[in-house]
Image (tube, rainbow, N blue to C red):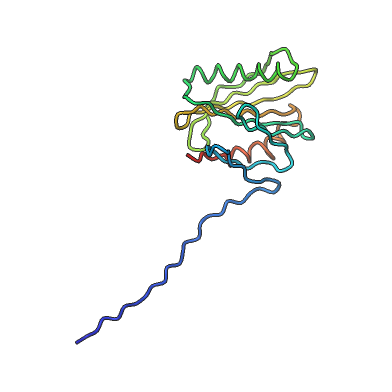
Length: 172
């Protein structure tokens, strides 16, 4: 008679990828549980009308992430982007005008296709470059708008905005 010998096999958990935050960033999770994003630790974050707003006085930039229930058509997205440029100009003391409009173009981000437009606006003699992207996700329309001084925008984009956008993840 042969006896079967049981052999215990140890299960070693597979390593899980660890997200590495860029230097100078920390993780921000939307309190509603809709998204997360890496945020610059030196910027001031606040909430305005349910939107997360980050501002850097020293770098002359800001970024806003928000969403509303219900989806938007392509025409509504383009219209919203244009009205966002006007609203930003007016809220900063400008006359609501903008120029050098770029787009709309489509960009992939966080598993969705976003519509992007960019424009320049002059407010009290200062030129800001602003980018607005909008996408639909799980029954809501999301908007991300970011702006900086036109002469500094390229640096701000590569060091702050781009890492934030790359880290943006929907949680639902």
